[in-house]
Length: 110
Image 1: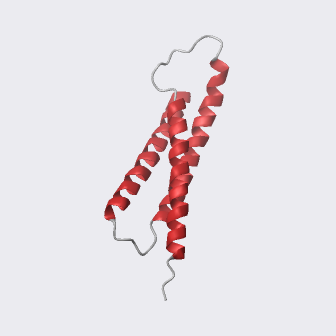
Image 2: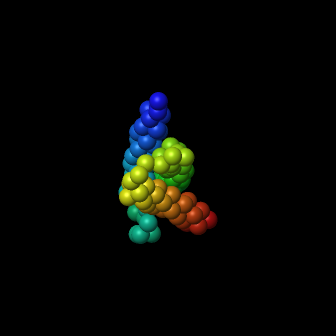
């Protein structure tokens, strides 16, 4: 008798975690202040709040991506490698851009 329920539950929860990571990543990416460096006078006090939000969202994206990777890649793998490559690409994209945002924030605020 084979119990595939655990594998299905891991894939479902991993997919939900990956969706949450993509939503968090997208929200942070849309709020990113890359580009125009001139600020309108009177809004300089918002800079630290936005930087803290971007930093916390990038860290949250890294945590959710790690959780999704752990859940989506159990020891036994299904026989669909295209799904694995798509998941690896999505996780790599979110992780790399989140790390870039963290390093960019560190250099921009110094």
